Length: 363
Image (cartoon, rainbow, N blue to C red; front, side, top):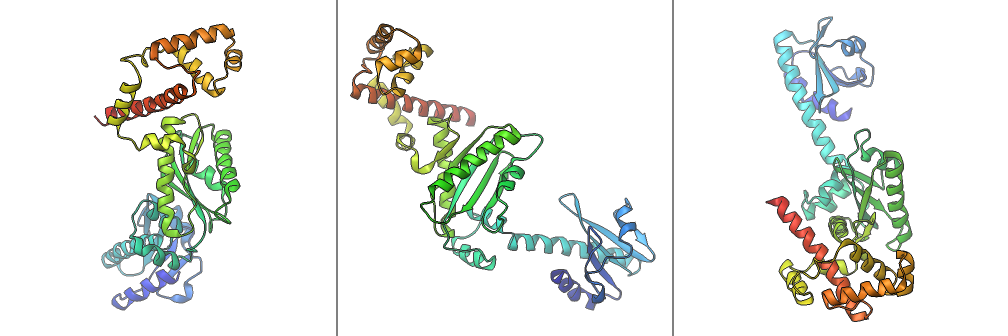
């Protein structure tokens, strides 16, 4: 009310008449007769029920102010017709601009969105945080949530419902399928809370929306200036996870394993590595059954007996398959060094396939 009353006070010196502003419920937010501020306008019901954008009642002109296609305010005046309409048009523009300025300056979620998307100068972050009364040296972590598209309910509504403490935890929608959660922690080592939070988000989205989600988690930071870094780490975690751990729902930047190293390598070097390890076309010649055998063999720590049991094949059948793989590729997976080389090669192949598909999409 103070904001809009101040605006009216600045304008009324140049206007010969009365005017004011009410919200969509009829509550007067400001008026040339300040005694009416905070009261319900006596004609509010008639105005709200009138389909016109500029109705007239009892010698008063009204103009409905829509923001993002929603009725937010109604401005009004008793200044005669032509001058009154011009006054309300000018007043409506000022009201919309003031609303936008206020939201931009005082909306905390918008502030955090600007921080993670680099839309605020680093030197202004602490200044703006103090203006918004946001603690600067507090432990926080960024969760980047990618979901499938849901037609009925936006995932933002569901995830926001899990974090009612608006003064500490902020849920920001980047687009229809991408959410960011900036969560405050008690201390930097509260990894159980981080893991518990991620699992709760995955479970809730799955049960309430029936959609799959994947979460990238950045590092814990203790200064508000570093939230952008945690966000970028969460992005990297999702990118690397989509290549090497596409089946995992939760990917922590600090637990990326060997995928982190491979992701940093130039594709030319990766191609040279595969060319060096395998005979021409030997890796591509392996069928799905053979690749499944290799995967299970690695999952069971190169244990022939346990792998054959899980594959429901005789031990000698598995040994035959391993011998065949050795003849095709030149690598004996029963030997530790060869197994490591083959495992890394599969990861490199995944990385190259993903890189090539992305290049194809760009083209």
